[in-house]
Length: 229
Ligand SMILES: *Cc1c(COP(=O)(O)O)cnc(C)c1O
Image 1 (cartoon, helix red, strand yellow):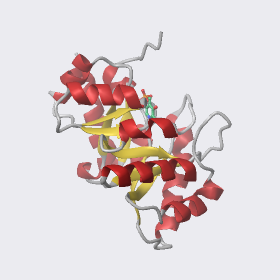
Image 2 (tube, rainbow, N blue to C red; image 1 turned 180 degrees about the vertical axis):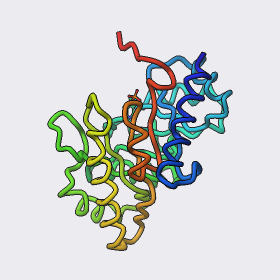
Image 3 (spheres, helix red, strand yellow; image 1 turned 90 degrees about the vertical axis):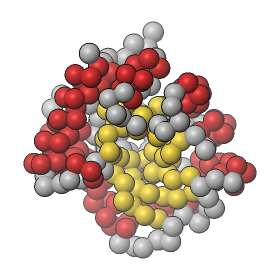
Image 4 (spheres, rainbow, N blue to C red; image 1 turned 45 degrees about the vertical axis):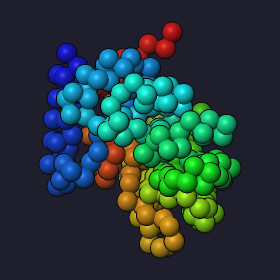
């Protein structure tokens, strides 16, 4: 049953790549498995999927212990500094860094564990009150400051676009994130890569791919609706 969802998402990603003249290999699908039981993750793993996204540090840590070690775990949720220890050396990429203090905590933990941690900067492109993420205006200065910290590496940008009925409405948001990245890349900051754009969720990942997403984070479209009760 999940395989059908997975095949459909894969198909839509391929189509969006064709529409925008991109290679399928330029876009990584992250299966967002938060709240879902490991049996369901295993089903998607058996479809060949290896990138999974979680938003709670302890849940991610617990799941890593129960599933194959070749899974790449992405931390996509807001991260508190006291939870950093659960994620560093477990996550292949932390998508949600939006403050100097959090970056400092990740860097300190990475130095302690003697590992390297790739991160993305989460940008609140639409300036929504309710969302985490640094403002577009402050992104460059944040990156500039963080780039000097040891054992962390800025690989690109992430955004959570507004909830909209019509996916097309988020196109300007994706375009803006991409342009911001291009502008920052042009400044050639040491230790800053800007090659990953993590944008697009179940509702709007096709538009995000058309606007240059290199990672899309799809939960509901693969695993079905989440039940938080
Ligand atoms: C839950 C979540 C997703 C997946 O959302 P869907 O709409 O279920 O695809 C993507 N990104 C982040 C940061 C999330 O927390």
